[in-house]
Length: 315
Ligand code: AKB
Image (cartoon, rainbow, N blue to C red; front, side, top):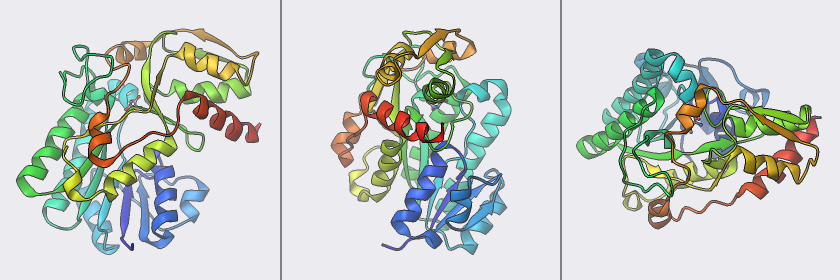
């Protein structure tokens, strides 16, 4: 099926792999990558690229009209840890970029939007284990507040203006191709890099802080499957809970030791601990399973095997 797609924020952790996958599926020329900076060689050389500020409505509109874009994946965002340092910049980026694409869809300039939400929409009063789709949502971080507000706007634009916007509440994402930046769950990627390069890792969370996580292949497949589902299947227009695995720093370190027996970990919790303490430890994603047949493929054992195998090629 031919369709023209724009990825905004294509050079980040999710955007890079998403762009490459969409180019593989829909053809390189049909998938336009955009970001405020240039990305990896594989991204820059495999198809069209536009320098684009996601908060600039006219610039986003120009790119959409020029390339006759039908679908937008809006991946530009400031993540939880960085957002605590720059609250207003985070709010500005996370909300204005979303309003821009929602309004372009309202004006029928694009047909469909994918926008990632996060487990950060939950807060300290939410039940932490197997957090349900509908629960108490009182996020205490700037990032969580922006994602929860975004979810409400997505549902509002769908109900009021029939905008076809689809969203997932991503857990922490683990990938070997692109490093994350500014998140609380970033330790789960850093740990593999340090295990291979130094043999030890100093973790910024406590050893027993269990958080929901997902391998990037599952995260990308979830976005594409959600976008390819029939409209009638999508019953949730705020954002779907999405689960795969949950583990603590101690558990991931044990899994790494299966491959690197001499690996050691120390713990020095910083301000990110108080963010993690307000997030779920595991997620109930039965609604996504029921509505559009979501099923994760990577558990911790499979993720560690893939991370060590792929990253060790560089050492
Ligand atoms: C973060 O840690 O900020 C993100 C997220 C869970 O949304 N990875």
